Length: 179
Picture 1 (cartoon, one colour):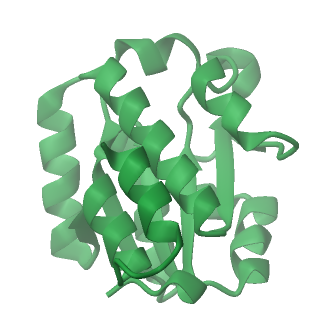
Picture 2: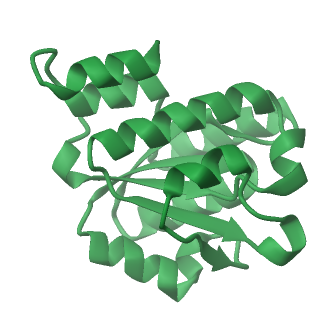
Picture 3: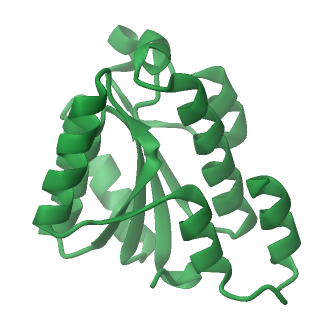
């Protein structure tokens, strides 16, 4: 089970034209907004990465506005943990469980999740918050990630798992967000 005090969120490369071209892009964006806002409400640290932003463009405005004063970590390697700044942010967070979301599922999300597993972190891929240009690539990425030891969740499941109890004050805010 996810534990609020042990969990962090990684947002991978939801940038430029590619973010508009991936499978179910509008639904992906809506789900990502819910996930990010939910994690912010729960004070879950968020690490946000952009792949070659000069080439691919910036994070889409719908998500960028949610990060307020936070800046993305620029990367060029597909596995974000190959970037020293990113890896240090993971270590400095002190979190052992990581939710991961973004694009593309079969490239940067997959390789970053594998990188986290190699460092013995628990990885939960938020299935309705990842995408690729083809649906087939998403399916293959999820199958391979599960085979390698990652778990799969969705926005509602992981947020409720983090809240744990409907008597918590934060529950009503999370419920409103999910609906």
